[in-house]
Image (cartoon, rainbow, N blue to C red):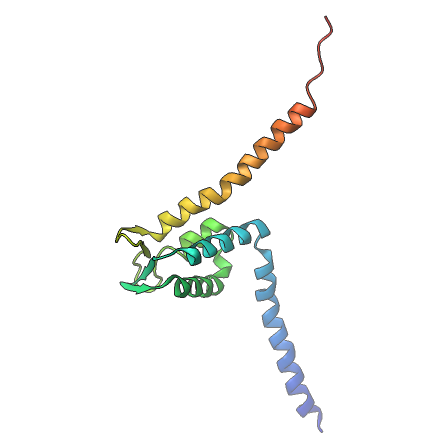
Length: 150
């Protein structure tokens, strides 16, 4: 074996590792709470019954929509910092045609996925806000302000 034959594989491995580190690091920089919200939105889409996801005029079942949303999120992860970014940059419109994604319900009514997912995100975030308020109220009740002397 020559030094050259050992050097090429070693350099290739170092280059591969060097290129992979920023991708892995970025995936870990998304705050856990935001990642959980995005996962909840995707799960919500996947749990819809008798519903079609419409992309570029074609109908897809929800399992296909979930796979598509995950793949598009992965491809655009550098742009997604929050659940709102996910909705706006991944789950709202086609990057190819610019057409909005739609959700068609059993009764034939349609809504833009952007509006639908924003409404669901509000529901997801509401319990967290309510818990914060209730913790403050319970803290106030257990630690009442000092009484003024008569």
